Structures are given as C-alpha cells and as structure tokens.
Image 1 (tube, rainbow over the protein chains, first blue to last red):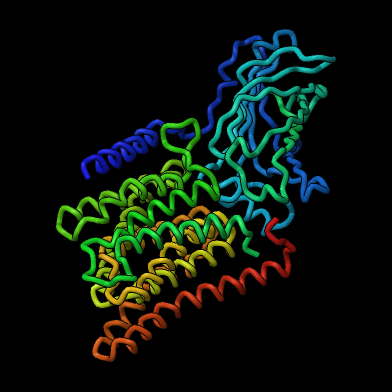
Image 2 (image 1 turned 135 degrees about the vertical axis):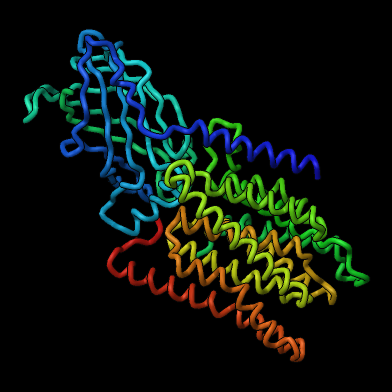
Length: 204
Length: 291
C-alpha cells in the first residue's frame, strides 16, 4: 500500500510540476531575430492551412483549419537567420460537415480540448534546391506529440498591400498521423496526411 | 456494426479477465462462505489497462516524450490505485481512496486546468466534482449494503452501457470503447452474481466502479460533446436505484430488486433515446457515417 501511495503521489506531483511549467501563451521567437531580417505577421484572411487524406483508399478528402496565426523573419540573403512560427487552432478544423468536424475535434482525432494548438517552430532554414526555394527544419507539435520535420518552402512572391510590403510562401509536406498518436479509423482513412500551407504576410 | 477486433479486445478480453479472476476468488461452482475481498476493483483495473492498451494503444506515461491525455492519466492512476480500493472501509482506507480519486480527477482534467480554466473556475469545477463523487460513493455504499448477488453489478452495468452508447453517439468512439471495457467487467461480475448465491461487491469495488463511471462521464462532457442533461441523467441512475431501494425495502427481495433495476434504467433509457434522436436529427441535415 505504501508503494502504491508513493507512486500515486509521484504521478500527482509530476502532473502538478508540469502544470507549473506549462506554456501559457504563444511564443514569439520570430520577434527576437537580429535586425537584418524583416519581421512579418501572417494575414489569416489571405492565407490557408489545408490538409488532404486518402479516403476508403479511393479518393482524396480535403479539409482546412479556419483559425491560425503565424509570424516569421525573412532575409533572402541570410536564410540561416530566418525563423518561422505557426500556430493552428485544432478546434477550427472545418470540412463543411458539422458532424464530421465534431468527430475530428473529439478524442478520436485531434482531441482539441486537450491539445488545442498545432504548432510549428523552425530550428533551421537553408537555401533549397531551385529558385526561391528554401529548406525549413523545425519541430511540429500535433496532438501533444512533437516531432522533427523538414520541408521545402517556396517564396511565391513579394507585393504591396494596403499597409505596406507583403510576402507570400507556399509549402506542402506529408506526415504520418499514427506517429502523432492519431490511430482512429485506419481502415477507411489513410495514415499519411498532406499539409498544404499558403500564406501571405505583411511586414511589421 | 461492432468490429471483431473491437469486440474481442474491448469486450471479450476484459470480460474474461474479470470473469476468470472473480471465479477463481469466489469459486461459484463450489459455493462456500464468501471470501473476505472480492478483488473486483483490481481485476477491473487490470482489464481496463490491458484492453485499452491492446485496443487503442499503450497510454503515454507522464515521463515519456508525448503529453498524456486525460484518459491516459486516468488509466495509469486507476491501475496504481486499485489496491487501495481493496482495503476495508476504515478511516485510513477512505482517506487513501479519496487521495487516489483526487489524483484521477486532477489527471483527467489536467488539460482543462492548463489550457482553459482560470484558477477560480478550476477550483469550482474540481470542488464540485469532488463533492459529486463523494455523494455518489455514499449512494453506492448505501445501495450496496442492501443488495446481494447480481443486482448491484446490473445497476452499474446499466449506467455504464448507457454512457458507452451516449458517448459513442455524441462524437467519440474512443470514449465509447473505453466505457465498453468497464461494461464488460461489470457484465462478468453480473454473471458471477447470478452464479454464486452469496456474491457481493465490497464497498471499495463499488466506489472504484462509480469513480471510473463518473470520470468517464466527465471526460465525455469535457473532451467530447456529451450534453450536460444526458450526463446528469446517467449520474442520476444510481441515485434513482437508491431511491427505489428505500421505497421498496419492505417488499419481497425479488420485487425490490426489480424496482431497483427498473428505477436505475429509466434515466439511462431517457439519456440514450435523447442521444439517438439528436443523432438522427443531425444525420438528416449532415450526411456523415463515422468514417
């Protein structure tokens, strides 16, 4: 009984410790970048975070996240100084079918109450293969699981917005949802999920 | 349709673990004086953990690289604390059980505390949940004192089955399957209860089963979309059984037992029917059939 009590106490204490050190809000690493790189904030109206997954081994099913935010720093000449941070609201998953959205928010999939945010935070940016291409490495957190990931990012263009310069990027990469602890419905829903992100961001 | 794998690992396996365990302890084929402990809580905790691990996945533990979800915490703490529910109802046992229940509650609702609640809201919810669970324990202990054989497992099984159905219909098959494991354990206890004339769950067993039911209901409410009314109806089921037991206490035992079972079934049936109707209504405008 003493051993059980001790184990219980240890678990409880661990949980409490974790509570005390848990992050309380979005991190703004991008804002702390050296002055040479320009800082940008993602414009959610003119950006998209989509996903696609094989359904019944027959077709591709598309969905999106309606709410997300992001900030980054970008210096074309010094890619190593660039930093990217994207945060996506898991509860904003949208498939145009409210019952499916409800199921996707549930513990069967995103478990959005317990893991409310999907986060990507870069650790390294390098020049990629091809014009305007970059290779971005970082940590992706989905469903409470953090994994390292590398993907190609295309700088799609620069322009002038209402409030100043704007810049665009596009990427798509594939993750294995089972590696993030999302194992539900593997019979009908593929385990590879392609994430497609297209952002327009305005300079701060 | 219940898939073969889900049935084997989520219903048959836990039923066998608890059934064989209870049969070894109670020896219903050779009825003698009842054993000092029924070990239901321990066998249920083992069945719960084994079945959940095989059917869904081994729950992440707090020391790994993956953040455990509320149900993961609940499973680990339930497994570790099950021996405390074997102790007889002395003051020390009650204190330790209360600590175990508090740890399960904090683990289950950790995400709400971290991501969604202010300290005041958290205190209100946790305090309210602790009081509700204490009331459930009192109701369950009072009911269990009077009921012999399969009646108490039937009452608990009705509530658990209702919760499994309602959770499944309200958005989370995972929660429905997890509750289904508890249903199988209670079903095994019910069979032993029919078999052995003196079968009787101990108060710790009832407290353990009620704690799991209560926490699974809370999990369904907070993490899935279990409506508050359905959750309340399910929680009211043991109280309705207790009310019927008090009203029919002086009647013949079979009639009293029937009244207890029927009274506990009424709120469960209402909750399930409401969920089915809501599901049908939503399905008529939103074409969706699981995956």
